[in-house]
Length: 505
Image (cartoon, rainbow, N blue to C red):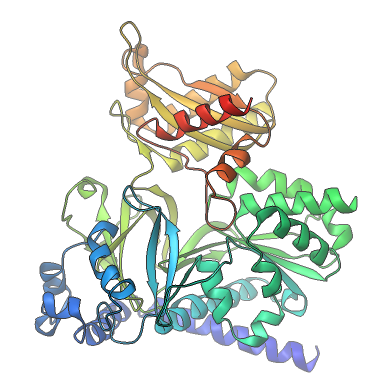
């Protein structure tokens, strides 16, 4: 083993040991995190409004500070962004805002990013991700080659007084240490705002490099890899003989796994799940045996969880980490060194272990269908469509689902818009398997489907290849963490898709 490899191994072992330490001290770490956060919060506007100086523990914190949703946070953000006020949410300068998917009232959400949250959350957890991965695979050598990264829009906007906004991938890229930048996709390419031009330039760049790792959202990375194969006429293993791992996140990997195995048919390719959002870096796959992720604790985040029975409440009751139960659905609430206080991020998770704390993402609090009491969540539909594809030997690219409401002489239903990579021989058989799978996964769905009284058979609409891409491009939602919405409790998305495609064709 070379000296460089020995040094690299020692560094990664250090990252892994730090993860082990925080696993062993999970409860005390959470209390330490909250104490640290309150110490900084006492010097802020929000701290004075909610008397942080009188908070002496978790119960008092939960009693005094309400759960914030983005609409509640926006007035504080306006004071920073518009009024240029200091010490509003955090007592060190907030120079960056990550632009995330919008709300009803705003095209984009502006998530504050401080120096502390960048260094001690995003970057620290990134290093620990490498420690967890290399501990599983001591033979790993991807750090000795290039990592191909495909993010969202890398455009950075200076909105005055040294305050900048941009996609979280742009924020992370601009602030990376120089040596780390050398191992990744060049910033000049990542900063290209035009999506088609970016794909073209990344394809030209990547085919000449010793690419050993991929990093990004599965759907967008697949678009790039297919372009590279098409442009060169070579398979990915022929181009990159040392390709080893894809660190992925943002959407469920299940619908894409088979396509990746086809486009990278090495038999040795590894896929490593991550959960890094605009609000923070929360989870990393813990073992090669399962996609379950370890909740990251050494990241200056205090976690709380809203049980599903409380999701619709204005100020829901929460439980702390030591109170969560395996197999139950929770919405995540975070308090962070980025200046977020008891902030509900909208993602839902289910713990699969509490020693250590392992979990999987099950959906979004706002992405569900409950038009008829069926309580359908993204985890249900992802699993059902994966099973239907497996049985019918088909492959999908994207899907979205919405309710069809009761008619004068008809029951309700779910309408599926599906874009296939490989269509099944029979859509009717595919639909029947999809329906049966949903029944087996969700007892409420099964009950509502009884005798077709309140919920009829799913209605499957097959889209042409590229239709979702064209629709997302039309909405200016291409690349990065932009995703096709899987579920909606109304018909806004499917009606918009239908209208767009009718105009196009």
